[in-house]
Length: 460
Image: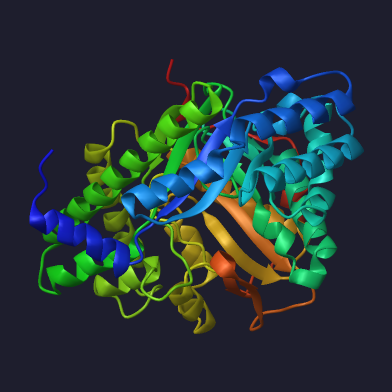
């Protein structure tokens, strides 16, 4: 294969100057064969299978880093939703199982393990309820385990009982991790229309239709896109801007697919197991680093700051251009694929929130466009459970009606209020406490039952 010298120079610049990285290599592992009526047997089987399958995962990723000279920021594992693997377990059994997942993650040297999850968009079994009840203590007593619950879908509607249960779990998680600015909530997310091949934390899980083991790649590269937008210039048309973003997204997606295939090949050889390459998730995921920001891209498009009129349209242009470029570059694109707008993890977004330029209501409007939802949003610690549930219901209504994935990773920071900041460090960044409406929604949130699916869900 021959390479153009300009392509080589562009790649070097992406790696060295513009913060381009592979955000995550996530090894998905099916644990469907770990079920048993005996909780101790489930724990033993789960620990053993993760240890065997993921033993070389971090090392293989490091070899690929050295081979291609590309940074892989996180090495992660996702597993079959544990409510399915251990259906029928008690709350205490699920807490013990979360601790086993944490121990397995530590043993194989990965950053996070995700899949302490339940899929309850239409209703909850006793096992689903037990897992949700276990979430607060599970998050408080582990370091690497991530939990998620899918509360709604376009086909099923929104399970109001599950939303209320998740709001209570989030509030209790905040209390149990109050000494660390309620950081447990950063590993806990509620979804509508959750996808089965998402490599990103905290909402990853290995779907039931996935193979025995698979590698999914989550790329990043806001800095690369920022340069492309800057080079287009202020006088260029929307079409020219979209074309520049598409060309850049093509390059970074090609890099992601190459890394994913090589990592799957290495792992297959090292483990003696068939580990396939799954998808490239072409999401732009920001970090607190300067120049690695979605908000900065939107400003470079011509906004004074995020939150200005036109913000949602600019995000739509960015999202669609990234998807179009990525789809041309990869054989299989999946996951969430779009632009993330986590407030705490994007320093320019943090600054906009602290100035009052971006509000919770504007973020909600933007989530109709972005690839996820209200992500890493800190709210006052005394926010009522019913208000948290109402925020989730609003967000899930957007996902349900528009047939897209939406989520809430809310952090009611215990003991803190509007104007204060929760500082988590690292990729989690710092979260300014954002104002929440004080209007009561309790009678609505407490109704329970299921919000019916939209008419457009009847496609048969």
